[in-house]
Length: 158
Image (cartoon, rainbow, N blue to C red; front, side, top):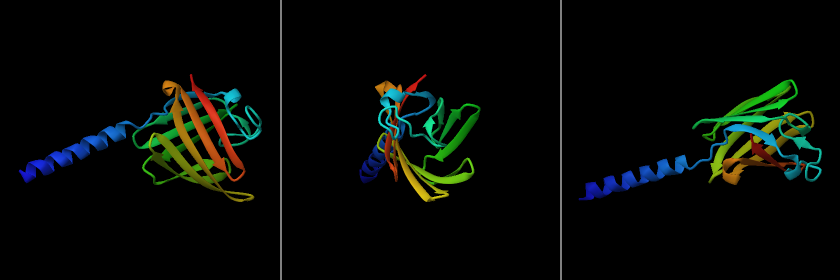
């Protein structure tokens, strides 16, 4: 009797863990920045950091996500920057122009939190991005906390 109860408890935990893992949002897709609904340093639609890689709004962003990794590509004219993040909380290293960043990505419920540290000419910079989906999965919001303040970028799925 005890053995059956123990097996039932283990099975219930396994089913719960699988259901929890499946509840993670999938950020995959091609996304276009909505400047009117974004706050990028200068108020809604204002000039300011438009995402990793420099000032101003970026072109389309493509995100590919698997169970273990999230890869994002941001286009700026002829340049495309690719960054990959391991989704198990271990460190990921990405080139950001002449600089290198080290990031960890972890889940906070249905939100993905990416913490990044990089050395800049002005010292070490730390940022925290919080990714979430809205509007039935057709809207991506990335809130970035930086030493200079917070910015919110709203993307719409193409």
